[in-house]
Image 1: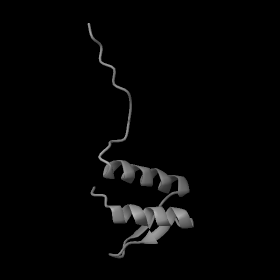
Image 2 (image 1 turned 45 degrees about the vertical axis):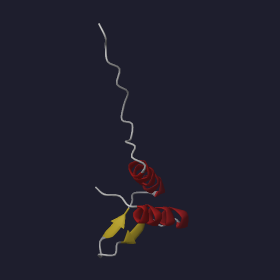
Image 3 (image 1 turned 180 degrees about the vertical axis):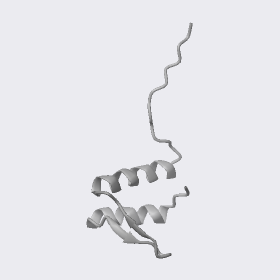
Image 4 (image 1 turned 120 degrees about the horizontal axis):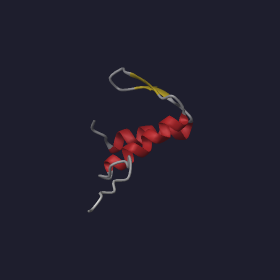
Length: 64
């Protein structure tokens, strides 16, 4: 999935105005489950644009 700065700006504007449902330029409807869901997705896009992956756990290799 390719994220863009413009897409991030749109998501942030939605969050700031309390909108969780919108229509894209190509006519697709997008609806987030809640403001919290939208906020999590904004953070995901920010991490992706900054070249960072989300942490999903801690890896601790055992050394014998």
